[in-house]
Length: 468
Image (cartoon, rainbow, N blue to C red; front, side, top):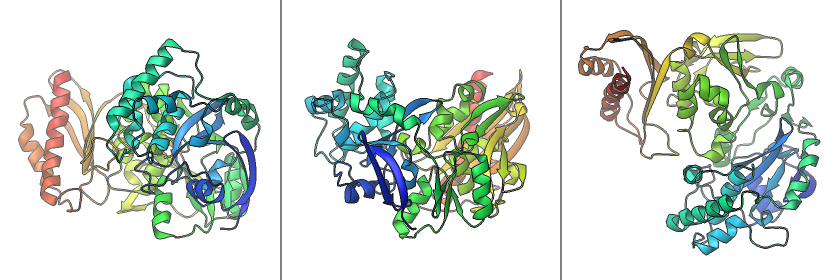
């Protein structure tokens, strides 16, 4: 892909250069700008060594997020502020609160992973909020310390929180970085040149679709970036929808929940509307990857990726969600239960873009429970996952359905309808598990997955019966 003009701030300094928009931000930092503090570990978003902070405007406020620079195309930094480990020291070049705590509590270890850990903590604290200790520990699930030095890192977290609670006005962001926030708000955020188009609104998106019907549609790009780095394949033409304003909104409309396709998983998880109307969706999406990935990845991308084990799809299948698809001159709404045609196959055609996900008002009246079985507690793909939807009555469960991932070529739905409280759940669960012939792979054998189908059904019933 040919180089185009990209404008951004790096550690408070304005930069405008001709750059390859599909290249990795990690490579830009290390190889072009000579910022060697950002490390490369896994290269596919698992280890967190390459974590940097990204600041950008949303609703006229500046948001700071932690991202994996190994998964982020350079085109996405247009109009943003990048902060690396070299840029977080205080204005007199003293170590800031995070760096000093890591030194004091021996959380540095070999130093390879500590820059990414420090940047994750920086982004967490930069939004003027004092997190809890558990918030910090959960945020760091995406950072692997190869020296197994987590005790020192945890002690550093405690020191940071202790200081913030005693000094609530302390700003982790230095004056130099705060000073450019107003400038970021007025920078151009779109790109309309070359083969990388970053659309700012629906009108620009439809024009781009008209002119480039064969372009690849990207948003969070977490999955695509990991694949292209491994295969060394170049993207020929790209339309990036991550900044399309109309697709970044979460709202209720006619009592249905509407989630814009460009909303990140973190946007959805933290949304007050989602927490109130679809709490299991907010809770279940936390099972996907780590915070650095969730800050970029989208629910629409989880849908379009068409993985038969996608946590987001399992949840949406249970919620009986609808997918809004637009093209240059068309719009249609399709049930997600009719969206998949087979393994990694969807109804999407060239030029189609998912613009919105709708959870109907009828679905919001039901209750939900998700189960996920994986080898690790966090940052892992499921062996089998499932989500149950139901309505409780005195001695029975009505309108009962369970969506399963990891047992067939696509996520599947079992419609159990009405189950009396005295039903033999063991027999019911066994009969359902015998309907499927799951594959065997590195995450689990056929026999293991069959047992998980049965066990998940039993666990769903156990959870529901506790509430009856």
